[in-house]
Length: 454
Image (cartoon, rainbow, N blue to C red; front, side, top):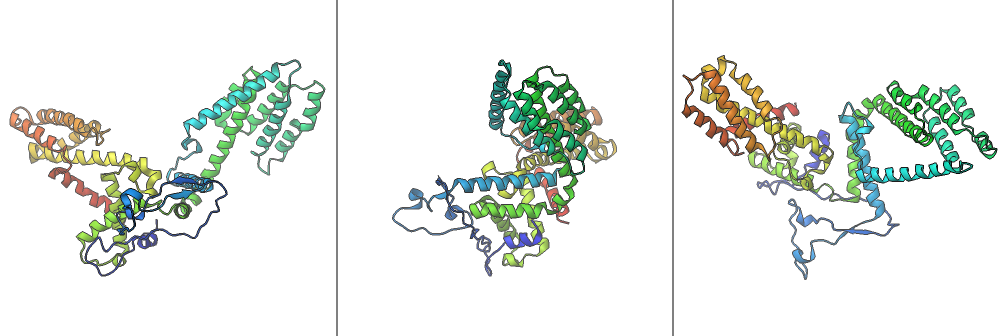
């Protein structure tokens, strides 16, 4: 989001010393109305009273824990489809903008959808094989496929490829093919060879090997099916080329486009940013507690808003929330943020271990014997896959490696059992997130935050 949008989203009431009272986040409203042409589906909505930002008193014959704080929210099928389409567009624009190596093949696919699609295709081509095995062969379905194939190939051509277009028009002429079928003079194998020759001239060089394998196929059904799959790959190549050609434009307008699409989602579901509001509320509460001179959010400068955004991201790295509580505007980057969170944990543990070990071995060895560089190299390897769930076991291995390295560098004369026990105890203490050394190591996030908004 832009600075202006960030400032607008952080609205507050004035003249209040309590940080909780200085924060006011209004519920999203919209004039967007979708007529319900289909039967509605009852999906329980979240009440504003449940939000940590709103605190409304409820009155009525039944308390809210029995009757609920608000009636059920109704979504029509059309509204659900509208939100799904909008989110798909957001995801596509987002991935293109942030991934320089983006290709359409990387988009996630539904395994169930892929399996159903495969079963339907297998059944269709099985029926076509039965038609070809009859005497005389039945080419009714094959004729329709050839017409479709012609249109697909023509769709791959540019306006400048006039000669190729004429070649395809004449070679795949539906009227001529229909006459050949009626007169029992149709040669499907010859026609497919013609199609493969045309495709071999149109496809990208990276597809040449695949085309050669297709030409060597002897089964007529496998060849027919393979041609359709090959044309789909060519369409994918063309789409990827178009994306790469227009990447700079997409990157320039992706943020604003995603914002517009997200606002469309909020038109259908005003509670679609509840987790985001909760996170902003928490960040603002902590910030106002440490800056009592700020009376309202309107007093925040652009630099302070940027600082808050940096703290917001660092909070996600340090303590990523459960999936259902993850901020909605960052859902598409949730896996990336969780992966960065693991690397952040690795970095904290590496720094903390170097602090502890360097203090024990002493300044002379720490600075003159390449101790820190060797230790860092070992720690990065040992903690490469560290997570919150396995960091206790990883730190046990770290302790053993530190002791081994210290013995080798210090020598028996300068290393004793007391040193070894001290290393074990202090590294064992790093398992606690509240450990003073670990908290000191985490202070470098202030520098990271500064770098992110300067």
